[in-house]
Amino acid sequence: MNLKEKAKNLKLHIPVIFLCLKSKETPLAAKISAGVTIAYFLSPVDLIPDFIPVLGYLDDMIILPLLIALTIKLIPKETMEKYKKEAESRGEAGIAKKWYFAVPVIIIWMSILFIIIKAVIL
Image 1 (tube, one colour):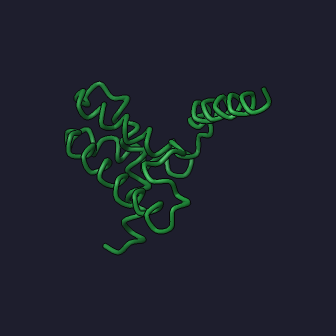
Image 2: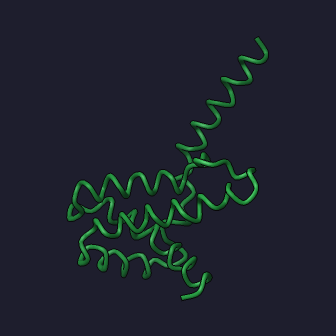
């Protein structure tokens, strides 16, 4: 499997993990791991900032796939297959295209920006 195929596969696993997160069939450990994976995927904050040459993007290429792999191992195979088919059937109109998942992250960052600006002005 080449890098382009792996990236496409990774893009498919994020919605599958999100769907598994909402399922009652998914064990608690997998739900916690899925929550951390989705939060890391959506968060603009990285362990190593992206402006640091090479290392900034390297952490995304290592940490996110490791979190996804851990989550996939914790989710039962039957549940994973069920939601993989559902995510594939949703296609481009699926979870990844819904903008409102970004609202909490935007609100948090706007609040932080407001606090910083208020501290600088006062």
